[in-house]
Every structure is written in C-alpha cells, then in structure tokens.
Length: 283
Image 1: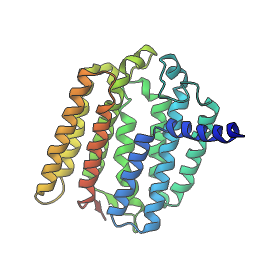
Image 2: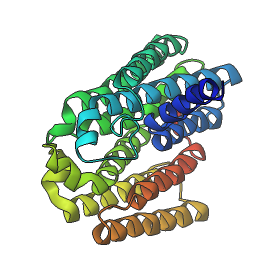
Image 3: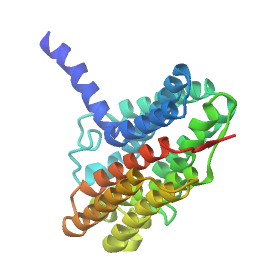
Image 4: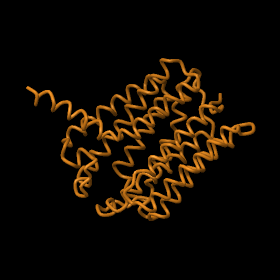
C-alpha cells in the first residue's frame, strides 16, 4: 500500500522538477507583480498570472521532452527525464496539456493580450524545438521577454500598451538571462552537437555579453522613464551592476556554476521592481 501512495507523489515531484521551476516561478511572479503594480483588477491579475504560469510550464516541460536524449548522453542528473526518473511520454503529455491550458487562459485576457501571450509561448517552443541549435538562439528570448510587459498591459481595462522602453528592457533581460543560463552547459551542449549563440561566442564572450545586456536593461528602466531617476533607482542600478559582475566573474572561473543564472534572475527582479514603480503603461 505504501508503494502505491509514494509513487504518484514521487512522480509529481519529478514532474515539478522537469518544469524548470526556477525560471517558471520567477517569470510567473514577475508577470503577476506587473499586473498588480499596474492596478489590474484582482480577477485580471489572477488570470494573467495563471495564463503565464501555464505557458511557462509548457515551455519547461517541452524543453525536457525535446532534450531527453541529449540530457541522458551527458548524464544530467538534475533532469528527471534524461536521468530516467520520469518517462518521456509523461512530460510530453504534460507539455501539451499545459499549452492547451495556456491557450484557454490567454483567451480570458481579451484577444489582444491573449494573442500576444500565445505568441510568446510559441516563440519559446521554437527555441526548444529548433532555434536552440542556431546562431539565433537568443531571438526567442528577446521576443518572449520583450512582449511580456505588453501581455500584462493589454490585459488591463481599456487595453493600453507598454512603453517602448519596457519592451526593450524585457528583450534585453531575456537575452542576458538566456546567455547566463547556457554558460554552465556549454561543454555538454557542444558534446551533443548543440551550437547556439553562446557556444559560438565562447565562454568569455558569452559571459561579457550576458552581463552587458542585463545591465543595459537596468540602465534603460532607470533612465528612460520621464523625470530624474530617484535615489532608490540609482541604488538599484548599482546593485544590478554588482550582481551581473559577480555572475560573470563566477562563470569565468567555474564552468559548472549556476550562479550566473541566479544573478540574472536577481537582476530581472530588480528591474521588475523598478518597472512597477514607474509609469510603464500608456494609453
């Protein structure tokens, strides 16, 4: 009886791990925070959060489904599917189910916001399925993260839009986060034939460009809004500099460390706070 009770629980844990919980939770929280900060009604904020969560789950699960064979070859014990702890069919079914839920939930946001949200998720799937192994691996991240503020804005009453600098800042964050995320996997990926933008630039180039794009995003959300930057914004910018520099330094010394990606998420959190505190919705 205990085996029957434990196995479903274990499978649920492995499925949660296969969803890439770190970025999934972070992006979902960021979207929810932007919705609340923009004054969205409670129902709208909840629906935005759920639609983004469903999309992120589908992205994470599709990534582990598509990469299962490669993860098994390089012995990725942190990947439940590649490590053989979760069947490919289970994570594939979860990915398609979450994608379907994303479409349904996106429709509740209105056709504009819904269409843009589905487009951001489709873009991320294009990375998993095709663009990961190309010089354009950064493009889906620029597109999807850049349009996330637009999803939130368009879901608000009256369907306003996000400012150009909110979109540009999101795009830069997406590129920086992507490059920081591939740093620990450069050697393993190359061993299985994956050559995205980061692999082509090399470890030093990838680390430097990751830090530069993350900082550019922060500078943009500090200086682009009307008026003089507040002291808190300047302090936040200084903190982002420290985080990005630390992540890059670690990446150049320790090829397996996940700290650069953690630092990228932290910079993104700083930028979301700055965004929420500014007038990033117009119309």
